[in-house]
Image 1: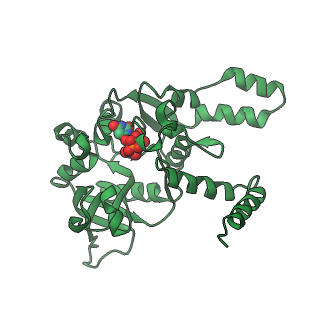
Image 2: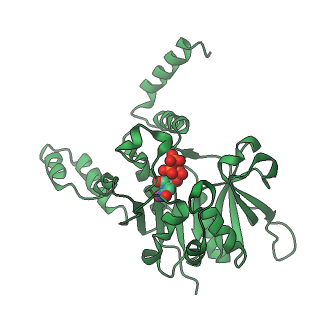
Image 3: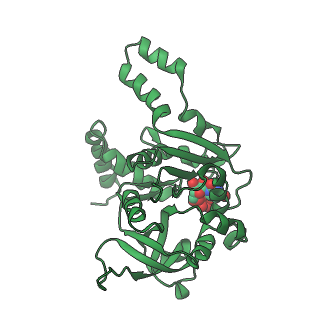
Amino acid sequence: MPKSVRKAVIPAAGLGTRFLPFSKAVPKEMLPVIDRPVIQYIIEEAVDAGIEDILIITSRHKKVMEDHFDRHTELEAVLAGKGKTAEADEVRALSELADIHFVRQGEALGLGHAIGTAKNHVGDEPFVVLLGDDIMLNSVLKGMIASYEEHQSSVVALMEVPKENISSYGCAAIEPVVASGGSATSSNLVQVTDLVEKPAVDVAPSNLAIMGRYLFTPSIFDEIERTKPGVGAEIQITDAMLSLLGSQTMYGYTFSEGRYDTGMKIDYLRAVVDFALDREDLAPEFRQILLAAVKREGLA
Ligand code: UTP
């Protein structure tokens, strides 16, 4: 009987150099998108996909993330005392979202290294990885877990990007998944045949970029331990995955929209605008603000 996917790992120990100066003292994973920090959306996505146990990889400068998912009994009591029961319930619910644990990555040595620190907690189970600054509003994680239940192999989320941008990402070469009858299946699932971290445009094997969600079997930990520092002198998860490809079939789960890389200033702004337009309490007034800005800037 294959083990079900119960655990998630959220690496959130990076230095956030693309979001300075904000990220000097406050983790970029705590950037607010309206009134919730980025990492809360990510945890809610994991819980929605059936995850019960979450390990956040953190660092010594990021204690505020632990506080956000802890009880705040004083605040709850004040809110309850003022009759603000909905607000009190919302604050308490943050500590009950899932079984949330923390482990520290002593030094930001790369994403592969960060995931490696989860080894003892994960143990001998398949698990998902959700990057701490990548919000996804789609059912990619659920689809990846369903694929694991069918094939018991690793799965990685892949999104087509303009070819000229591929050198900012891990890149996958793929083949169609062939069904038992010999024909290619029509789902989002493809088979990964090669992986390269941040390839030059002219040697990139495709324009499919690895995007923020991974599902691994525990054998990834042995590969991470064997992986030497790669691009940027960091221990790259793409390199560990490439070694895994030698011994395990790996699938790619393709998708085309619903992802926000909030670790990049411009994509963070897109997230704030889209999420505000989706909020009944804010959208009417916010639309007026946008319209005025569009007029002022002569955009329409
Ligand atoms: P990023 O590459 O987006 O994060 O990693 P970064 O290194 O903090 O960003 P920049 O390039 O300096 O701006 C994706 C996720 O992996 C975590 C980050 O916190 C982020 O949520 N990460 C990255 C770690 O936990 N440890 C690391 O060593 C590197």
